Length: 289
Image (tube, rainbow, N blue to C red; front, side):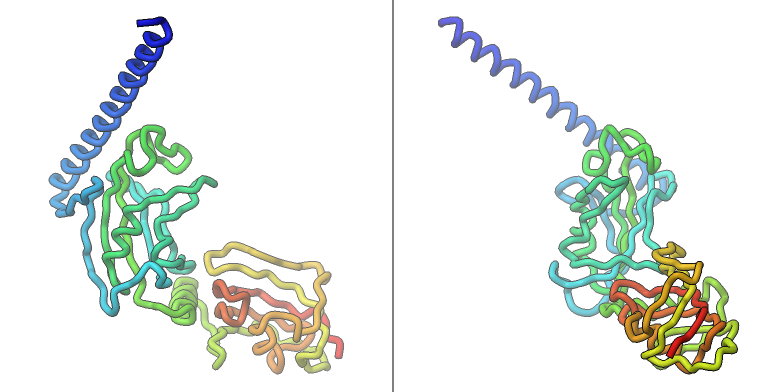
């Protein structure tokens, strides 16, 4: 046997040993995960089913209607928790996420993309209105490195509460989110036939009536329903013809405000930019016809 052949055999032996060691370590982590999950389920008297790939799941409410396909749009909710109950991340009823069912396993956390296949697989077991619970072992979640910035330690198993809302249309979700927002804030608002809501604190004293052709100087703050400000102008620098602004402003402002007027306006997504309801504070600084 020449030196070259011996070198090849030695290299293969080293690779085999390293691969076996890595495989053994991975299997050990799986075993540790599984033992911890089973102990948790037993101590909390929770009955979940173990999938063939190793995560545990249970359908709490199956939902109703047609079986959902991967190409169907769904409005869904999730709450990520540690097994000790500490919440890591969760959706809000004021900004309900939506996507195609087939894409519900994709997340961006801490600026990094993650794919949690068990979430899509469990959501695929539900119909609209359904809820479920699953536990993802650490080897299928954040592994030995964990995710310190959101509170996940090394080899932490993750529990996820899941749900698919019964709504299938954006306007239905808008209505739910807006009603929830108004109730949470104890607001008193008028509902326009357009489904926008408004409250007028000052109607204004200007002499010129506002029409779609009016040029307005406006101070405003625009927020998502979770309070995030996406745009604002407070120094009288913003000017536009009303017909060039979003539909919600066009429908509500004329006949209700004049120069000096102030209102709070909540518009559904179809009267804004199409993606979410928006909450505005509006002051009409001046009107030019």
